[in-house]
Image (tube, rainbow, N blue to C red; front, side, top):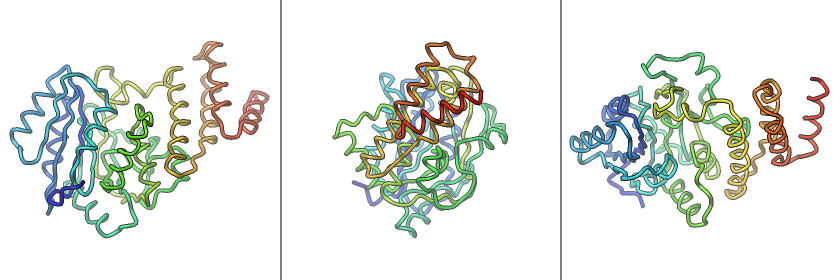
Length: 316
């Protein structure tokens, strides 16, 4: 249950973020707030000096920063879920160790909004996308999977595979969010692939989501291997990542059913078929069959998807 003396719990997971984590934590500690907050840091047995820096900050801010220095690597999802269920605030905010907040009033603005709008389960904002040297990447921002304007976020946008905002811009109500996470754990639901999209769906199942339209965070987009950035491991077009992505669509549809929502990603499957057609030279014959069968048999309307695949083949 929330601790009434703590208004916000900030959840931070970090791995090999030695170069970036000072800026991330500093952006938290600069927040102008009229309430108490805690920062729970899950340091996932980094190979660089990240753990040393986390301990340094925990020693500097012992009443605020609670470090969890893992003695073995848990992986991002297990690390984060473990931190989430330990939170004590009325609200939960997220900031990964390589991102940072650009608005020193981020927490206060979102607390004020959620306090005033009980119908909203979560609120988000807009983000910059920056490289490893903090250079803003406007072209990447243009084509990102985050909504580009403020306002209410709907299930239709979710089915279009748009997110209500980047994770670092978010704030969730603790009770409904954490209780759902705990219920899923108790039910033995496979949460190994849980990430930001799952969190957004949980919030949608409980109430409304709103985006303020303000730029409040910087999301670090780094493709260099070993950088500790999520995008370096997942943002390339390969058979492995494509099949994992398609598996994820089906799993999120199942989660929607569990939460009492109908989620249909068939339009997204059509989009992925078009993308595959335009890049099919990258795949072997065996891989092409795998992709076709995966898209077809995972679909909610197999006849409609088969018709779409056939028509695309005829046109090509």
